[in-house]
Image 1 (cartoon, rainbow, N blue to C red):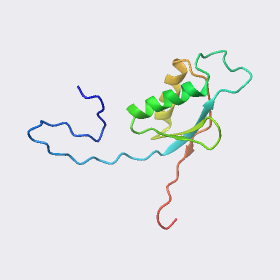
Image 2: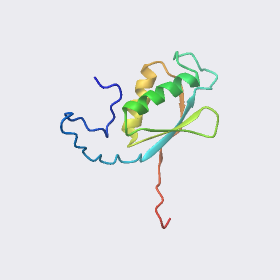
Image 3: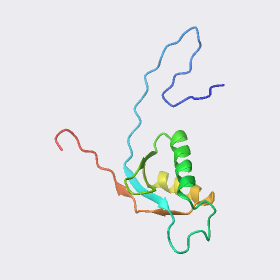
Image 4: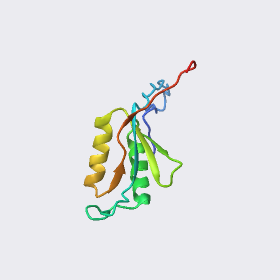
Length: 118
């Protein structure tokens, strides 16, 4: 099997290597800031409460979900997670909660894209 196959790769027979052009993936439309739970009640519900575990989980998600974009913020141990909609990010957060992660999450905000003329 293939060890590293990505969405934009073409799989074809070796005797006819004809590359298919990749379609661009739409950029994220909303974003949230995620950090480790730092409230006084941290650690009561989940087992994954440290930022290292959160970083690994977000990195793993970004490898398999091409519509998710993860950016590390300037603030210590916070990540900007962008996606195509509230449903996509809600599913990510709910699956992480079921896996035992405790997170602080900002409200979703619209990602604006500035063009050449502002």
